Length: 109
Length: 116
Image (tube, rainbow over all chains, first blue to last red; front, side, top):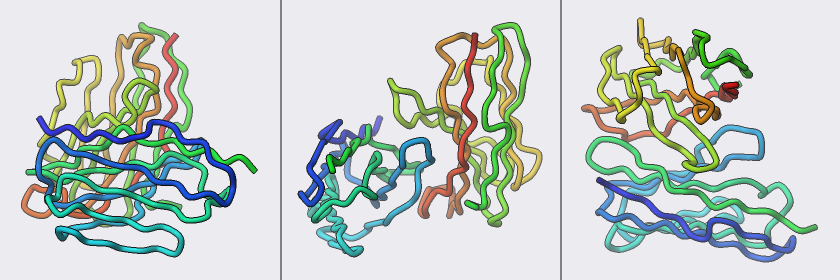
């Protein structure tokens, strides 16, 4: 079945540094979604990418969908303490979303 | 307010107890989901209901029994659970188009379950 892996599993950065998480699928995806889960909270939808090579930005967050539609990345520029949490990608395949393993981001003030 | 409400938020039960988790969505979606989140498997899909019909059962043990009386309500009945079933159980809803997940999932705040 479809598998979606994320790296790294954990990332500790100094406040102000950049952060990137990568998502790789074993199969070609129809779309990719990204979610953020704050500590003690629930996953909240951030964005969806559909087109090959698509790049979308939300303020300091940049999302990219690979040309082959099998990988994606989320890049945060100049991290802030509010960016703390776990970031999940979720790949859309034939019918259902498959969530990645998540990257837990912690910020050192 | 997420539009998806889960109760109870916390539940402690013994292995011989029977309890239920409840989820209600106020978003007019046609699909509802149960996910299990634990340290070992971050987000594990359990069940999917589309227009009250179960369309996905991800090899979940029979001690978990879902019920979907209508498109707005979803239950997870629990009986004779094991300590390894302790986890955060998340309900979600979305709009499915032609049986496929095409839109975002809206998650509830979760029910934190502890099995003693």
